[in-house]
Amino acid sequence: MPTPHWYDYAIVRVVPRPEREEFLNVGVILSCAAAKFLEARIELDSGRLLAFDPSIDLDLVEGHLATMARICAGGAAAGPIGRLSQRERFHWLVAPRSAVIQTSAAHSGRCAEPAEAVEHLLETMVRLPDSLR
Image 1 (cartoon, rainbow, N blue to C red):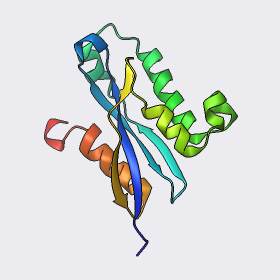
Image 2: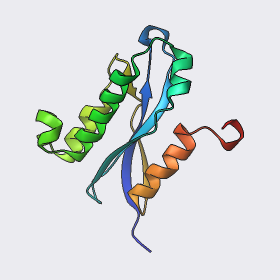
Image 3: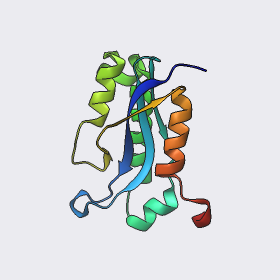
């Protein structure tokens, strides 16, 4: 059995009107230094988001969310932030901000496989329960 590793994660949220503080969980960013793993997985439910704010610019939101995934991947496609270390990129992504795209506070956990931890977090924190789908 693989050795469990510590990881940090944050939930990605869309906050259509930050002054109202209402949000929709749309993804997870998970960082596991021991496994050299940093990934953002996004599952935007456009219908649910439009229920919060029918006038929201979905293309703009989708573009910003895609940028988070590029930053996690790193490299030139992610711009100057993409040249930072994985840990620095994670901290940059989860820094508090008052914008339409925000993250929860960072939390920690342990797992043997970071990709499985991302899937578990998506299932419990982002996706609707089967009874509501």
